[in-house]
Image (cartoon, rainbow, N blue to C red):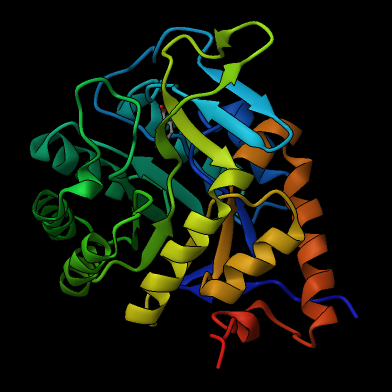
Length: 309
Ligand code: DHB
């Protein structure tokens, strides 16, 4: 039996269950077209900012079998160029386009939200959690500022809104963010972003592997943190679909995030390492896991991990 992975979440139809997470290789029309032509069930863009940004100094990305570290620094062509790209892409693909954006203050955030709301993007994803801008804190660790951004974005937008959260390792702060989200009511929670300010050292060379030294860690080491975050939000906000991200290197990982409470799964590091064929591979492997456990849809498996009696 071939599983039907298509689903409708937050009022948006997705032709599958696995998508790219905002981050790697998702800026140019060619990169985005590559994602659109793959089995990815949506096309998520690199986070765009008001001004074009070259990003941090190179080398700023490093990968291993277990995942990756990057300190890209939000390189992007600026929102006006990104909107052109999104609008061009929409002429060529029926897949939902998720436009990720991040302002460096409230005014910028509102300007970006307004402009992207008028674009052909299907979902707006407010990235409150980039770890790699020197001197700029991750807004998601500051609940009052997060609430102010989200509230103002809500006032100027009509499209479904996703909020991209930081990895929380403090349950009290997580619950404070739950309260914010109860008030703002986004259509999606996207969690987790990379774990910021990690460092990888090549012991043989006695070398820190990226030039900016610290970066966001993705891949297998962050999976338990992703699952813990997904589960906390799923238990507290069961009606808000979660785009589960963090450590999905294969279909079994995707299945674990779904059992925790994710309704769909985003892939970052594994896409950076293996390219766009990885989405189809992970979805196929997810299908094997679902069938092995007697599920015929992803929805049946969402949140089904049970506590020990
Ligand atoms: C970048 C942005 C992110 O949101 C992230 O998790 C990692 C890196 C960046 O562009 O630097």
